[in-house]
Amino acid sequence: MFLQTLFIFSLLIATTQASVLDFCVADPALPVGPAGYPCKKAAAVTVDDFVYYLGAAGNTSNIIKAAVTPAFSPTFPGVNGLDISIGRLDVAVGGVIPFHTHPGGSEILVVIQGTLCAGFISSFDNKVYFKTLNKGDVMVFPQGLLHFQFNSGKIPSIAFVSFSSANPGLQITDFAFFKNDLPTEIVATTTFLDVAQIKKLKGVLGGTN
Ligand SMILES: *[C@@H]1O[C@H](CO)[C@@H](O)[C@H](O)[C@H]1NC(C)=O
Figure 1 (cartoon, rainbow, N blue to C red):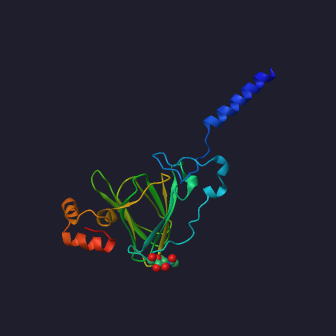
Figure 2: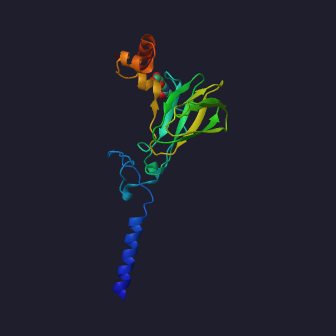
């Protein structure tokens, strides 16, 4: 009877351990896959894996006068596997987060300071949805769609953006076109832009060829 009880008890523990995984804190030293990073050993997990500081303004002294500070799974290991993440946007007066996409997740943005004009473009009919957002306004950007934000006000803007992915990715269209070594002729052929304009943007963004 005792042995039988012990057996059932062990089975229960084993079943519990096998069926519930509370979290899978990223081990960013290991290679990331489609489902995220492999889990850190539970014994090595600390509360700091679940805490991130986004209280500091990003550095907006750059060509776009804006900064994106991501708290995604590579730097915020606690979100790994949870299909959620967050980031901070700082956009100086005249600054812009140029057209970009997040291939891996939808985005929800809340303005906490200043004014942002934000919008996205649908993929099926290229309809534009854009609006000027003020403090307290929230806007959602569906996964994968091209979208932008720029400061249309007179003071620096701050927004927080959350994603339905632990690592949604960020591809900025201008950087994809003009910040690499794709030959200018091919960029011209595939975008219908003038060569002079392409060369100018490559020069500004650090592209070659
Ligand atoms: C912000 O970035 C610029 C350009 O890279 C740099 O010169 C400046 O020192 C940075 N400021 C701070 C506070 O880190």
